[in-house]
Amino acid sequence: MRFLIRRLVSFAVALLGLSVVIFAALRILPGDVAVVMAGLNSPPGRVAQLRAEMGLNRPLPQQYIDWMAGLLTGDYGKSMLTGQSVTSMVVERASITFPLIIFGLLIASAVGLGLGVAASLATGNGVRTFFRVFGIVGGSIPALWGGLLLVLLFARGVGLIGLFPSQGFPQEGWGSPGAAFASLVLPALTVGLIDGASLMRYTRSALADVMHNGCMIEAMACGYTRAQALIHVGLRVIVPQLVSVAGLMFANMVTGVMVIENLFALPGVGSGLIADLGDRDLIAVQSELFMLAAFFLLVGLFVDVLHRVLDPRLRRSSEGRM
Amino acid sequence: MSVSIRDLGIVIGSQTLVSDVDLDIADGERVGLIGSSGSGKSMISKAMLGLTPDDAVLSGSVNLSGVEAVGADEVTLADLRGRYVGTILQDPFSSLNPVTTVGRQIELPLRLHYRLSKAERAGRVRRMLAKVGLDAGLADRHPNELSGGQAQRAAIATALITSPRLIVADEPTTALDSIAQRQIVDLLVRLVDDSGASMLFITHDFSVLARATTRAYVLEHGRVVESGATSDLLAKPSTPQAGRLVGAARKLALE
Ligand SMILES: Nc1ncnc2c1ncn2[C@@H]1O[C@H](COP(=O)(O)OP(=O)(O)O)[C@@H](O)[C@H]1O
Ligand SMILES: [Mg+2]
Image 1 (cartoon, rainbow over the protein chains, first blue to last red):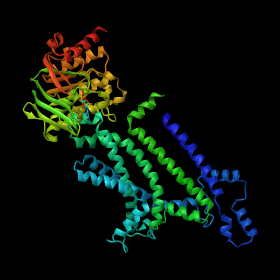
Image 2: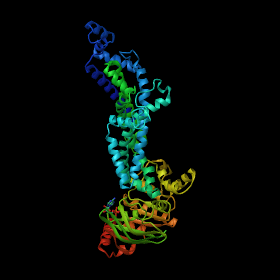
Image 3: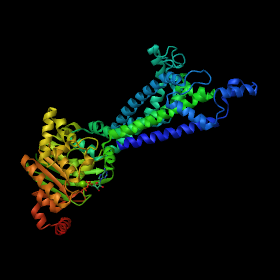
């Protein structure tokens, strides 16, 4: 319980710190939204007027406090350019990005855990080499390059075997689930296979460590074969570690997905953020970055708590301190 | 279960860890294997059941009541382990599964080899805990919540839960103080004799050996250098290796 409280406090402090950093960074950013909106050749008076309308002439601490007060009451502000509320913009974009990440994580977990276990059990030299090469190559391919490769192989129109669309998201969104799903297959495969290769390497090395652990030999002494012991005991023992890795992978994926969304022309959170940044849409970018930061921190919080629940050794040591 | 080991050799890489070992255990007999640390005792006990590391190469023969264990396939060996042979590994703390409860650990051999209802299994675990002198409440605890003596007793309970015909106990008392050592040895001897099983008892300590076994083998650098009745070995060790171990045990007893 004390662990949870401590963890929540550090979550709040980190979030507050990040909000200051985001706010400050955007004030330093070159380019002025008022100038952009007014047009480069408009008279200075027009720019000043716009600035006043958007509240950009208030003192900085005032702007920060107003922004934070808005966040606390759930008001994330409006886009300076379109007037649409940032919340609804983000929700719309997240309806593409979130399924993409989950889909990618599922692929990564299936590939990573499956091949990781298979690689640990493999005895033949050829098979071992295959797994090693897959781990190294897959884990070091840049997302952009991997995505292009998949497009060249499987994209409708340009690919060797045209299976899936490679550009855009259906107009009606999830209103046409089949088409929406199909347009996520290649992007999800890109992030999923790349992170899956890393997860595979991690799983294999963690299992190799566990192999020499007394509890594996004990499990075999109780009647498991080596393979059964690896799956029933070895995997379970490394699950807490894997959860931490999956948390990192998840965070990694959010950034990887920004590149991928641009490559596949998906109007998601990542490409939206980049577009808003290009437009110098200060309020939108500021709130979007804050939401992303909050999301990252939430994932970290969740992973830490889950790690603790899954590993009795940690639970005990925290109780010991009370 | 009777054991007959002939010409056992164990090689890992370029290292010969065990060679030319002959060792017999009759049905219901308690036999000791004693030797200084690193002499290959654990390797021999693991070789009996296919528990040696992946890269170990075995030669010779280990016959368990007619079943040849050296070179046997995994499934045959796995079926012997936990059902007919109960093993107590060297360090109970590192061998108990850290992420499962003591109760789940103890019932594992039952789950793997017998079709019992959950309630039947729980009943057996409860009776087994009582037999090894552990509180029934410990079944829901995790290994990191146990003391050294409790962990050792839990490991014994795991090895004995299926009433196996052979118990292999690898230094089951090393981690304990001398009073607890005696208690654990006496407990083990009583349980093994009650069930009529045979036992291979491994130690580097002669003072424990006398309580646990009637006959013993002295191992040095992977070879058997002396064997005979445990009392004879204690009274008049004929090799310097055995003499050193006996001397060490006497010194320990005097302290
Ligand atoms: N996995 C391994 N690979 C190579 N050598 C090992 C391995 N495990 C143990 N050994 C070596 O085998 C020898 C015998 O070890 P062991 O049977 O554990 O000795 P004991 O149980 O008598 O103390 C030691 O010299 C040890 O260093
Ligand atoms: Mg040993």
